[in-house]
Length: 352
Image (cartoon, rainbow, N blue to C red; front, top):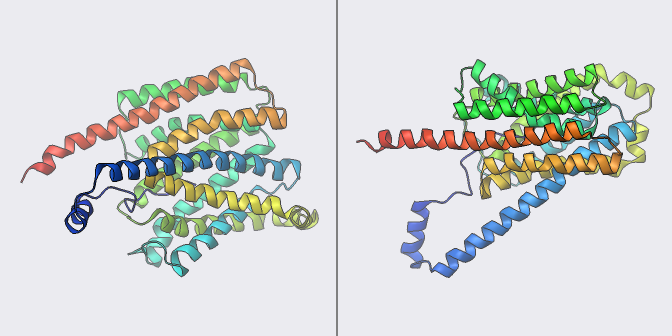
């Protein structure tokens, strides 16, 4: 799950560096190089572990719902988010390992944080529901089209105006996804509608995060601590209405009792992926996390082919390659846009 990015931790502070040099003497170059090398190795390890865990959780969720026939996507998502809620509460409030959140009262939570969490829960539900109608390979390919819906949503909400480079990158991504969809042999109407709904809900969540939580500066784990319970409550409410009668009738609890490690692994991996995302942002940047998501795509596609014997046509693979190139170009264009905006603001801030 993506969380609002915070400026806490992990950054270089010129003031802190000056104080250190004043109190402890000049820092030698070997020490600086050693620290940089250690930070690089930590970031590399976090990135590799994130790739493994985020790919595994996709496969394990599919296995639980399709192969083990636990056909309750809201309940599966609620288990993961509930586990994250408890873990974050222990880490943030009981252990107090991160700075406390400020200015978060009941009104702020229900009007600003809860809607974001509810969208997060619905996004997870729609993502899980797709496993019943589409292959893992195509689902992962379809996620490359997220820049298309995100750009449109931000533009409609008048939060961002895309540059020409961003528009070109999004158009290339859209063309690639259209080709991939044309080549998908198992594409159904319901599956296609679920893909569109999932991407639209994820884009809405991103827009709401940018609009409702603007200026809300808190540690990413504090953000997850607030958003995860909102997502869990939404999923539990939906599951109670939509899934609980079927779970009782089909004795779904027996599946959990028979395969407890599978469900525990899925819940733990969800938490680990979120925590690793925070670590990667602190050690590197949010852009690195987005690029990793693009790198994960081909890995999951290959796993779907090898582990579940899914068919991927040459047309589908060709289209996905184009979409993946557009996705990477899109991230680069956003980086260039942010750099240009920062450079434009610099002279204004320099004036007395």
